[in-house]
Length: 484
Image 1 (tube, rainbow, N blue to C red):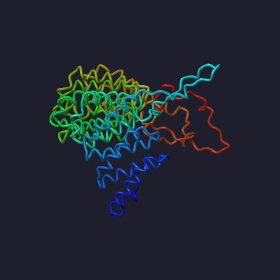
Image 2 (tube, helix red, strand yellow):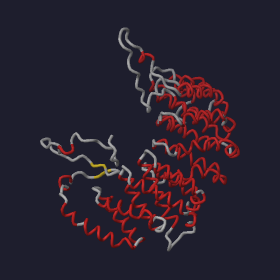
Image 3 (cartoon, helix red, strand yellow):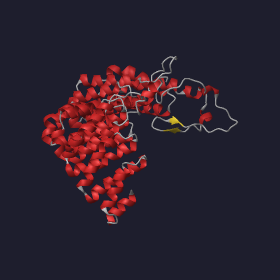
Image 4 (cartoon, one colour):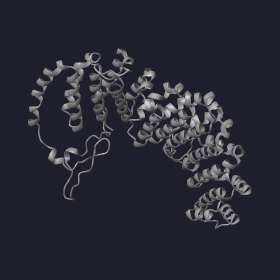
């Protein structure tokens, strides 16, 4: 393919020869030839743009869209992109029935007929297991083809963005297969990019804002990333009217700035800077404070521990960067009513006792920030917080002990009356460190790695067996005390 690109750029090939070989390859029994023919066809359209060749390709497109080989089906999209760039809606209207029809037909998956056949005289075979991440035939690639045609048509595609198309994409965004959901949000991004602003504000935005909100909190990072890309396109198309949609999206977008997946986190941070501008996001958060707090509290109760951790980071930011302290208040501090502080503090206390230690770690630091910012409002929880911090000081994870000590020190600064109690408990607790059994030298080769300090396997010789204390024991999820 690279050699073809060089030859086309230098004028080395004749159009008739390339187009003849490309069309012949589409009929070849080997999938490699069909894929190569489509790749060559896309390049040839860009080089010569001959209508007869495009017509021949479009006649073959419906068959190739349902080819048995995934890579052949995937290669159809670049061809449709080039054709739509030249003939626009004429191409889409000619293929819409095939593409949209295939998406609808493949939306519900069934096992192959031969897999369901049972042997006479024997009990029927158990149902075929169909993994959620594969086996959906041409559904994913037809979504890719739809995306390519929208991109190729540009703003001229706006009249085709109707309730039928948006309804189909809505169903795909809720599909059990994460690849289909991912492509649905990529398609939504293209819808927002090609749609005229008037049509977007009139009906597209109201039909899709809740779907985007669902996507940017999807459990699959790839889907969450695709939805984050769609969310940025959504706000860029909304322009000066973007504040209409802050109640549904602002808090969720802020949460993704702390999501564990780096791609989602960095992209969301860039989106946040684009939307908020040089004035920062504090003014936007407090302008929609109750919906933002709702998003944070819901995230703190999510089944995904990484989402709960992100919620604690965001709540910590509210105290440290938005509210300020009684001695150094920010202009936004008056938004923090007693009821709002009470609700956020209650959420942190629940996270402080989470089964996942990374969540407890961030919640501990956030609680210290809240005590510093609101010492009077948090006074009701003082005894419970001190107890949790001292429990954290005895944890077997070093970072938990360190961060717990720092949070406790911050709390003593906000509540000076704690000083005597803390000293008494430290005088009782610190000597016990010398009395605990020392076993750390046994595990010096267990170097932490990854975002949750997952230990690397300890290297051992062939003659050395594993420690029986850690063999055939209950297994736990990473960062959690819940058994698998």
